[in-house]
Image (cartoon, protein in one colour):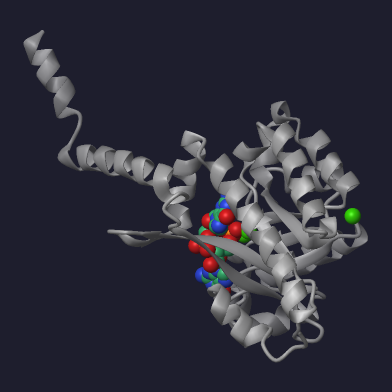
Length: 280
Ligand code: C2E
Ligand code: CA
Ligand code: CA
Ligand code: CA
């Protein structure tokens, strides 16, 4: 029995122990991050391919960890989802985005739609949150399409979350919906049939190799034609080169987002680049 016990512990290699410890600390720090004001929203423009103008922006969260420095959302969002902290974080992002939209309107006289990412987990306890969101929009005197919600294909798989009804409620309230990372899920096409969405975002993995990938070009063209027939606008993610942009524009893509136009930037940089000098 003793031998067995020892073997059991052999199973956990030092690196796994380290990882477990690291993860526990991350969770602990994550719980405090909102109160300690360690989160910040970065903004990345989504550009109209027909005229090069900023059409709207995506809000992307950043975590300035006091010791680790910048922690990527790719690293902490999954942990936040597993622990349920994503609800609090998601509400924080929504609040900040709505307040920012109202501020831009009063400072610069422009209404810029802000897209926020909504985790599938957030749909679970949706009832209360959604009402709160709507009342904040009303309180700020914002139209409901000041905010667009980006959802991923995966979430729609889970019928138990009542996603269909919830998305219908969004539509009734006038909140727009983007289908994020399009093409990476299992049943993208079924979703398009089932849900009334406003935007489809072609995943970066399709955009990346467009230059030397004629199949990739054909796929993008087909996605765009199909979306347009369904009355859906198309945003290409991860546009990094002029050539990619040209291929996508020629294929009829409506909007582009990516390093070619701008990386996600902090508020001050965004305002400097796109808003200062406009009317006040
Ligand atoms: P996403 O929603 O697909 O966001 C796009 C990601 O691609 C962002 O990474 C962005 O910085 C990056 N990106 C934009 N243009 C380019 C490009 O031209 N080339 C390349 N290589 N990358 C580009 P980021 O900010 O690290 O976010 C990663 C993911 O974390 C997001 O993917 C999203 O799933 C999640 N995320 C970020 N903020 C939030 C949030 O507030 N709530 C939730 N639930 N998830 C978030
Ligand atoms: Ca997104
Ligand atoms: Ca995406
Ligand atoms: Ca539609």
